[in-house]
Amino acid sequence: MDFLRPASWEEALAAKAEHPTAVPIAGGTDVMVEINFDHRRPEYLLDLNRVELLNEWEVGEENVRLGASVPYTRIMEHLRAELPGLALASHTVASPQIRNRGGVGGNLGTASPAGDAHPALLAAGAEVEVESVRGSRFIPIDEFYTGVKRNALAPDELIKTVHIKKADGPQQYSKVGTRNAMVIAVCAFGLALHPETRTVRTGIGSAAPTPVRAKEAEDFLNAALEEGGFWESGKIITPSIAKQFAELASGACNPIDDVRGTAKYRRHAVGIMARRTLGWTWEQYRGTGRTLEGAA
Amino acid sequence: MRVNFTVNGRPQEADDVWEGESLLYVLRERLGLPGSKNACEQGECGSCTVRLDGVPVCSCLVAAGQVEGREVVTVEGLADYAKQRAEHSGACGTGACGSSASDGKQGTALQAAQQWSAKGTDSQTGEGTELSPIQQAFIDAGAVQCGFCTPGLLVAADEMLERNPSPSDEDIREALSGNLCRCTGYEKILDAVRLAAARQERQGEAV
Image (cartoon, rainbow over all chains, first blue to last red; front, side):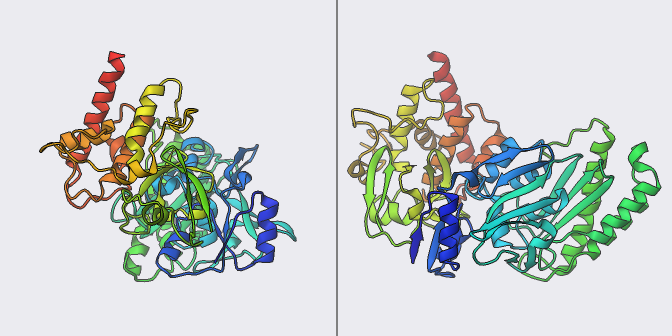
């Protein structure tokens, strides 16, 4: 095994071009587990800790440009207003020790359907900026996940920045697990209201081979809210609409039975979480004064 | 490969490090510092918690090569680290000033760290050994049973008290949520952290 220690982004890209099999390591919270358990013996480890720009973020007009290695702790502390869904999701990641090391780039690189950041990214709307010596490109988050633990990265590409839409309305995140800390999601659900475009976006985790949006549920809800004039009036969403939305969200799942839960349970739980997160965010939108910040 | 980094305020050099090796392995097997415990090797239990540039991390998930040029504090250096912090309080908000000494006397020498033990002069464990306030509080509150999880809990709890001198019970539970203990049921551990926080507060008032 070789340990590659690029001091800059350019050096990192050059190293990845020269050694496409090199495994990038930043927080190490996925990669080191595999190495410790001898599940993986990569020929090269590509340490990204010295690449400063991966640890930085910038809040722009419309987007937050989040460096791939920015630890979850920083997102919770500094980006709660701009990225409320992702901040809530970050707070459910493992433990303080893990959140101090792991970041969204690692979640995307590993591309596990259970990664906590994915539903929040899908709901907020995001693009992943990846780069190689050949140039850079932006991959819409909806096209990023290509299979179980597979993503759209080419072998010579590295994840540089995640461009996430700043919240223009309330966002929520819900995760089912057997305990509060140190738990891999049985399933998870992210929901974001986008009052500017009068749309609702969703993200489902751990209930399909990849993280997915509940597109049919979104389409149904967007039409129902528009038709009923809900965005203007801010009135309570009719229970029948919420119920239908929940059922369609359940239907968007394609889960399996595994040690963490059954497919049937996951479908059921996703429906419940869809209804609840819709209720929470809509209450916030209506401005009833019930504070929900930090609710997870 | 060779890795140069600072451990408990003193520069150290580890040789013949395998590229896939963890920081935990380097600390325990190459530097002879077995205080950080090796249990799950997957970041679940927190018993290997150390400070990396001041931040609590699971040392089993840090690749050895990643610590080149960086600063690590282990439980063996915790007493000195806390002492430096107390002496510099006000001047150093981060507490990461244990290694900034010019006389070279600060920090914990590797040999001293290797020989560290909470041996008592009689029945009272810890007596005669320099302890950090959190270590003393763990003893006084009876928060140690088998002791395996203790080093990780000490490092995590000490860091929280540095950041948050008056933690609520929720703050304590959250800060220690990455550390598993199979003996105590956690109540005595929570007591110990509350005790350390209260003592810290009282001391602050006295000054």
